[in-house]
Length: 446
Ligand code: 5AD
Ligand code: SF4
Image (cartoon, rainbow, N blue to C red; front, side):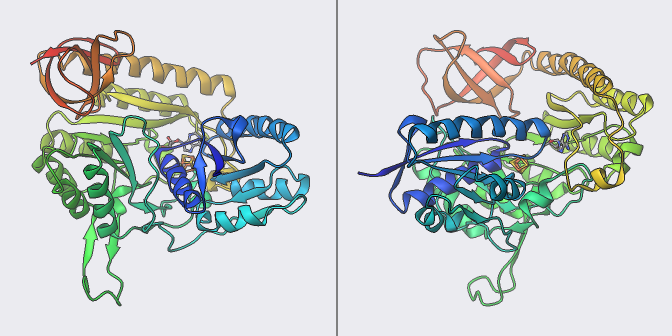
């Protein structure tokens, strides 16, 4: 009988895709996935370090896993992903888990799992300059069989002072575009209708053919070119991508979006702050004005482009004026949606070494709430602006609230619901927007 692996995933879409890679590697040595921890031989948590509360949640889960191991001592507990490096020491001290594997160590998992014996934990956290797992076909976790994540690069070469990612995931490397296209073709042939190309900073994607590659000698591929290669697979395959870095996104990418109807008109465009003082301290490589100019250019080249963002409230030394600058930027841009966070100091980052985390928690919370409140109003305005428009939507399934209605996202990433008895999951449907709530477009068939 096959052994069973149970995996919990925290953090970003790239981590979800990493879990899919892990499942594929473990399947290769006879493991089968289970969603019931109680029957698993191997319990894994693929972890996130981005904010302190992400780490705390994982610690809580490790306690739960250890209870399970008390009941069934043969179970192997493993920690994967971004927390691996830091957990390594704790593990050595306390013998908390059996296995710790960093984001570039997943090929070693079969050997590590086989080598675990009581009192003999296995650890590999070394980061790689070349690993992209490009030959591994991820085991998809999307329940609909509709939308697949494809990592196009790993690591990050930016040095945002607040961010732990360069330390947890290492240096940036771009994956061979031909393996990306092959993977996208493969999921499309299996019925998937959407691929999301993932990277910490997709605009710095750059692949150079290895010198010993006769087929593609001298060739290099930029992100805009990759986007086009994937878009050309089929007009029936939607292409999304994330994340774009404000100073790196090129007009070429925007023109490619405008040229291909199946490249979705949505850009996730993290601003982080509306204040030049904060942006500089955060080591973001753009100014407020540069950001606003890029937004204008996006809206010029890709009309009706959906725009979402990330923002941090209460970074080191943030004054009331800096905070007001963030609010005014949100008012000017009117994002469709935003991920909004209070600053959380991460060990090892430049900010943790150079700046004091000096904004009191209650001030951070108040500022965050002000941003959330403002964004709620701005997002609602953006949604109401869609009334009267006709949008092409990919059907995801029945609406959660009204089961006789269908739901699905438009290209701009807004969720639509409409009464429909004829279409099914995976169909493309044209709908006309008749009303809006702050996060949903109420539609009818066009
Ligand atoms: N504290 C709070 N938020 C952070 N982010 C990254 N690092 C931190 C931190 N130390 C946010 C950024 C990033 C998103 C993924 O998480 O907004 O874009
Ligand atoms: Fe993803 Fe960053 Fe969390 Fe790692 S730390 S899982 S890269 S969000």
